[in-house]
Length: 427
Image 1: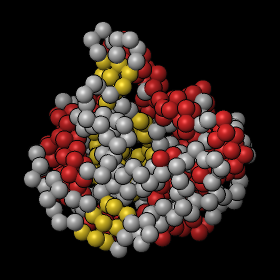
Image 2: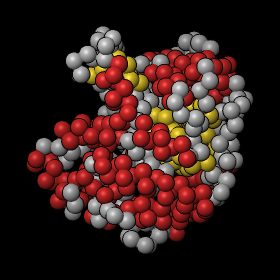
Image 3: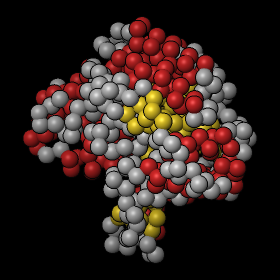
Image 4: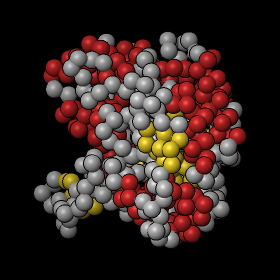
């Protein structure tokens, strides 16, 4: 597939997702949930980073960092706001996003489902609807035909996440908030992707991925297609290895097995959890923590890629990896250490074709609102001014050294960059 670089090439990029940065996604199920009272969400997405109108500037920022790829998502609720009605204006907008990437030398990596869907699809039951795979594939076909120049397609973002983290989401939904959410949706809360039942994910979810993959391949034969998965590095105390392996078999193996028929699998790793001998799990005792409550563990990325490569042959792209928090100096070090670990995994034989940092912009982090900041670029939500953070220079240096395909060159320590670069402001 022409969109996927060979083993001697490498993609360096950053990512965003439509609902988290575009703003005004009023036809989506997530918008409805944000405005329920009481809401499961800390705050509504509102105008977000207004990327729907500022996409050209944001793509130019990505290009200015010396990257050669940009991952973004197209929004189903904009493209098909009512069943069977496809918006030419929305399709033209996303076509212009692809064209801007190509004009600036960035491979467009397009995600077709990043947690959100049209309200009408939620009312029909979301992923649990009997015809969800066919409806999703129909939307993917229509969008793919409009996106001439798309290099790589991700069908569904983190399809395994509702199985892996479902308890976290359910625990946030007290009876009053759940009732309000269901009134706003006009459907059971399980119609929203993050609350989807495990059996639905393993049935209709995987079927939807396969149908979408085939539809995109038919519309765009030269495009590499895969799904992305949330994969945490799974460690174990001595004696707890079997319990750890049970988690791996439940959360990851069915999806990695299904990805064997894909052109690649997207690996999305942020941290490490340790399974204890008593069956509990959590961050390793004494590990430094991020503002998300995750262990600050950049080396997790390389370990995950090693584990995937030990059992599956599907090429990997790291479609997300990043550091949440306000300590940008630490973010710079995290990037350097994560890429060094990835380089070591590639040296050990892991077939990894790219590293895409999450995220380009500080954005709307779902139920947590705007408090969590992953971005290489800060966003003033009043003026929408973009400010490059010093950590962006670390990724810039990695791309400059590694874009030729020699990932090993990017494993050099770059601590001298850290937070020493002058902050730039972009309006």
